[in-house]
Length: 138
Image (spheres, rainbow, N blue to C red):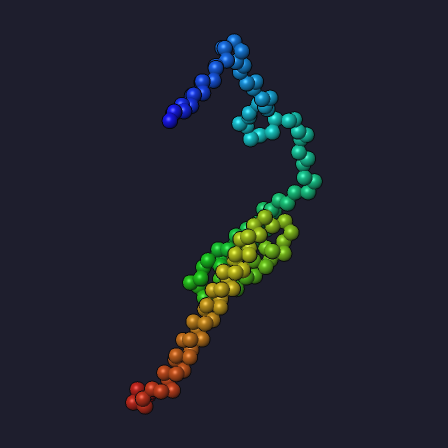
């Protein structure tokens, strides 16, 4: 029998160099690396009413904070921290509102801690005195 041979396809012809066209660049915006808007803006308006801490009252919130930190002096500094903190919060021109709130919180927490310590000590003393042997009590 006869064998059938298939002809190989010829390679595609390359276009002449003169006819090959380069792709046109796409119209793009210029790339800017600045994060600031370069458009002219109107000047910012000045606030009509500014809150400035008054010189005499601004120390009250700081005093409340410091009194709240002085936890090793029982009762006195904690009560003063809460009182000064409340006064500083009620002052409308106060600039240190966070310090006043912190003074109130620290004063309240340490006041409760001192109360708990004195209650435990009182209970321990009263429990010891009621169960003490008669020979030790004079």
